[in-house]
Amino acid sequence: MSPALSTVDVVVIGAGQGGLSAAFFLDRAGLDPGRGYVVLDADDEPGGAWRHRWSGLTMDRVNGVHDLPGFPLGAVDPTAPAREVVPAYFAEYELRLGQPVRRPVAVQEVRPAGARLVVDSTAGSFAARAVINATGTWTKPFWPTAPGRETFRGRQLHTADYPGPRDFLGQHVVVVGGGISAVQHLEDLSGLGIATTWVTRREPDFRDDFDVEARRAAVEVVAQRVAAGEPPGSVVSATGLLLTPEVAALRDRGVLKRHPMFARVVPDGVRWADGSEQAADVILWATGFRPAVDHLRPLKLREPGGGILVDGTRAVREPRLHLVGYGPSASTIGASRAAREAVREVLAGR
Image 1 (tube, rainbow, N blue to C red):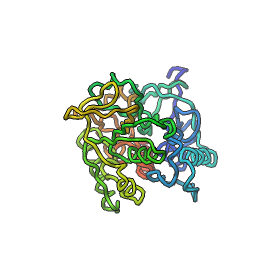
Image 2 (cartoon, one colour; image 1 turned 90 degrees about the vertical axis):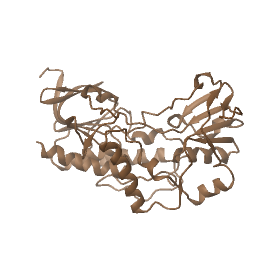
Image 3 (spheres, helix red, strand yellow; image 1 turned 120 degrees about the vertical axis):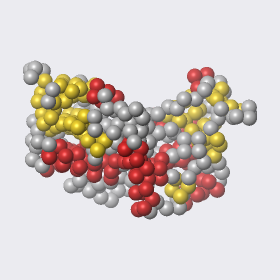
Image 4 (cartoon, rainbow, N blue to C red; image 1 turned 135 degrees about the horizontal axis):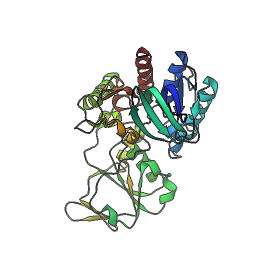
């Protein structure tokens, strides 16, 4: 091995829900922090994607926060911003359990090198027997193709950049997207009297309840996509929108009046298929995220359908790589369960 190359048993990429859970199970299995395993995280502080959520996303509006293993979150103020509560929880978790997270460390690529995988990063290179990838999706916002988008003279931004409603006072905002984030943006904006137009490709699927069977069915839809080698989509997209009293009130007020996708973007707004136009100052793309796996390109994991085929958490094309938070495990509870499974498989291969 080159002196510049550190040898370690397992590298965990990402210190969000999945990465911290994986570190917990590796530590509990007796691997030494630093030599047995390392955790690399691109952010400069704990909290993962939660650090970057908008200030108006309070704990009573998040789509579930599952306890990290070994240390429950406990009772929290439901009106507190999620971007403060969850990062503080993650920071205390790292401190109490002694998680050896190295940050800020950006992973540039993971590549095969004989019997090991080499993880090249801004903190040097690590030769690992196994890699657990838990990079999530937040750093990979999806911007759909829209004719004329480059001609728009107003402001365009994605949910990943959404600062909260006050930036848009006195403006007209077109919100594009049929998921939870879009509905929350519409709620935020309408709360300050900001004019909005809601645009989705399909009719919204409002549901009165997400029982256990409905949630399992949604996860199974995503699992089937992954099993077919297709991009996974999201678990949330398969569940529809929960018709809470707040959402029902928005619908009754006309805030959730859905418009079909516009034909094109024009300099001062959007144009519908019939030729009519809606003037707009802002287009807010609440169009979701894709798995942040660009650093895995050297492993050539993509199937013809565009996805990564996995067996459990193990990548079929590269069995030394485990994907946590990908496809059916892309939720806080799913990521923790997948982390446990990944560590079990990693240890079985020692």
